[in-house]
Length: 276
Image 1 (tube, one colour):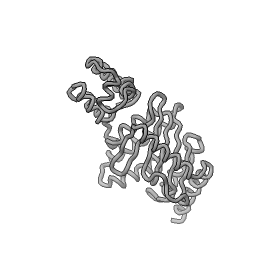
Image 2: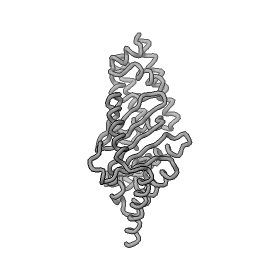
Image 3: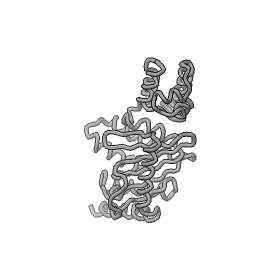
Image 4: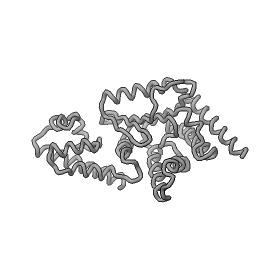
């Protein structure tokens, strides 16, 4: 489904939600209280500013007695075989964000990956997958990265652990290209990149962390492990995640020193290629 069509479908979701809520004689605050979100969130769902998670859509169906229509719509709209189920909603929100903060402890962030690097990562986790599957996942990741090519791109702030610069994903030549690409994006000011060095010791956060801010909606945090992900809307939890990110930034090298380290790591991998 194209982005424009998907947004139109979410707007239909919101319009239908408003109609069903009003038919049930409930205010946004009353419906929100019954499904354990704020009335402001219900308003954002109705305006297609924010997309509900499946469990919220299911609870709305229960309260409004709509026979599962909102859960089915939600499943349909976030269903994209190119993304893991738990990540699809985060991708939708990423497209709406005005600011994105990203921390990656082991790999180049998805928005900064090259096709070859992305393919190597996907093959590592799906060694028996078909070429069609691999190509679809790589294509989806590259589609995500086009977000940073848009003139209206979000402000994108990245912290990567030094581990990212040392693991030869796909081999020395491939990771050198990936690091050079990341450095290029920083040089073009499409991303602000910092490296958390080994010398910083213990870090304030240990998994992948994505923080998103929006023009007309509260911020959201997304955390991910190898086989699951969680979208966090609770203001107290999101604030705690932001605090952890601030600590990561504070312990990281400056953008200038980080860029030097990334380029130096790429050169080291290039030398490995030259000697083989």
